[in-house]
Amino acid sequence: MSENEAVGAEGGLVPVTEGEFAGWSVWQSDAFEQRAGPFYEKIEEDGSALCAFRAEPRHMNGGGFMHGGCLMTFADSAIFAIAREAMGDSHGVTLNMTSDFLAPASVGELIEARGEVVRGGGKTIFVQGLATADGRPVLRFNAIIRKIRR
Picture 1 (cartoon, helix red, strand yellow):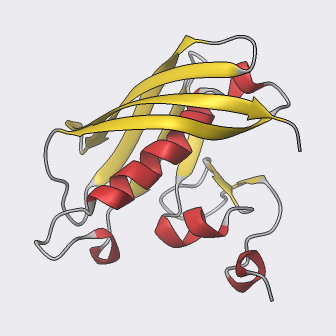
Picture 2 (cartoon, rainbow, N blue to C red; picture 1 turned 135 degrees about the vertical axis):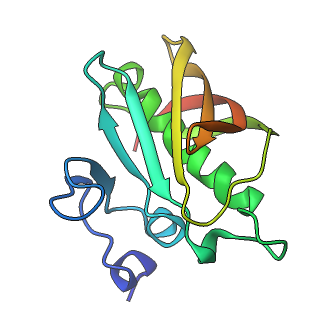
């Protein structure tokens, strides 16, 4: 059994119909993101992407704050939602991502990410964004996506 099968990760972006994130969508085809998150996304009225998840005890480090790797994984997921229009039908990989930790996040907080494509076109897309915890900035990120063919 594959890792994707083990966590029930089949298909692509699917709508959520129940719970806190009803009306959002989630990627069911990424086993790692399912275990780390799951991370949710939706398109706002202005056409921009909003990504989110609720901080749980399993997301915390030994000090009781959100693990930096969890925030970075979330940001890495968010860059593809932010860049979806620039990606078109292409798949992509993260070539580079930098992160600046701004403040700790705690259990129960709503973690959100918003951003923008700074430069797109061709095979390379540059994205910047900000993750917040209950509206408080916790992570600033910049990334480069490379479009690839499958």
